[in-house]
Length: 133
Image 1 (spheres, helix red, strand yellow):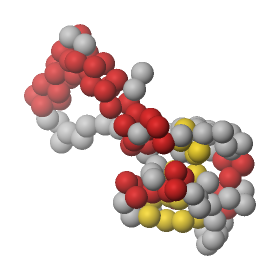
Image 2 (image 1 turned 90 degrees about the horizontal axis):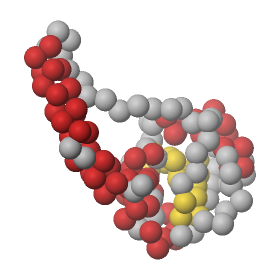
Image 3 (image 1 turned 90 degrees about the vertical axis):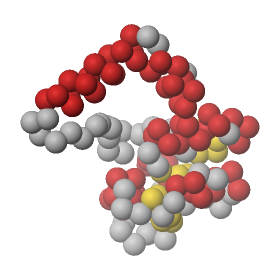
Image 4 (image 1 turned 180 degrees about the vertical axis):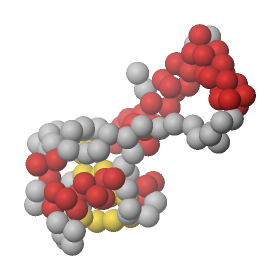
């Protein structure tokens, strides 16, 4: 996440700038690979809600956090004049539901439930509520 109007359009543009990352995440790993493990430009945080307000307050040029979390924050704080940016240098992550291997009954119930909320529009309404368009 960056301030609106920023000239940052990708990971390379963060060179020499301050970026906040959550300790131990893929954003932290990516920043370390890009800028060096001990770079003073990398500021680490433990709780994402504190970091999401940092670009708005100044002193930080970008925040790296889970896309869903950042998107939800931006939807709820539309007046903050911040924007999401994506760069292929960051690892792509996928969310999922963990089920004990071989538990076919639970897997079937979850798949039926997901199919039902997609069919009746509940999934889309929930998605738009928390992540926008």
